[in-house]
Length: 287
Image (cartoon, rainbow, N blue to C red; front, side, top):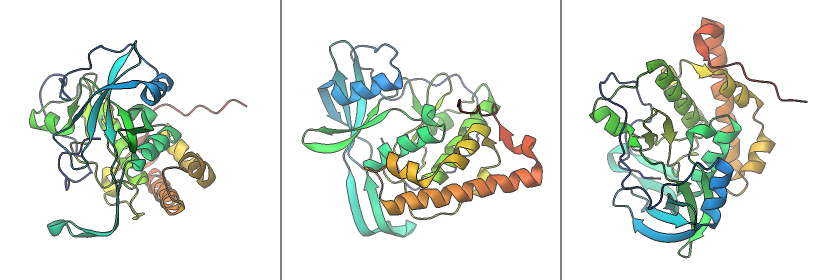
């Protein structure tokens, strides 16, 4: 959604800090606090609720908007992005030239969809396609009462349970590899007062590289996530993201999946499952 500054390494390291639970950083709340809506209800709301207010955010290079929506009962905010830029190459000065550059709102929905497929939907705010003000784009449910990871570090706040916090970070890093996201910067990670980590803004994901740039940052993996990665297949992924990703981009995701699984299998072989795997055993699907 909101990109503050690029070039920050996506591999976020655990930081020793002190402080209380995160406070609000995304601005004033919507006019009426919404009831607890499940993800399916949020999807319906984002697709159908009337836009009653809009304002362009002063931060971010993709010119995002914060929209207030209402269906007459619920009022809540969402982030709207319509960027869809594609260039043969983009020159980023000291950071070099990127070929086949893409910055697209379609990737937000693709990332949200894939997160659900691999058991990480709970770390992503609900995202839908929607046209607004004559432009196609994506709407993403606004996460209230959240701070950015950059703020957490600046204010030296520490999660009350470092192990659970580390597990969330490992999930995020693995997902960033899976979707080819080199822009997991400190402004694209939100934290709510319950120390729940949320991943936002994937418009520059789905790059072409298929390797793991920082393998040492992936020492452990959630059992369920690893099982979901193993089970992910190309036809399912292609069908789920047909309006978001090209065949080439889907193929790249599957290659990165193979690299991720091989990485964790090698760790398990070398260190043992108890040292690498965490989380509950995945439940078999009912027959």
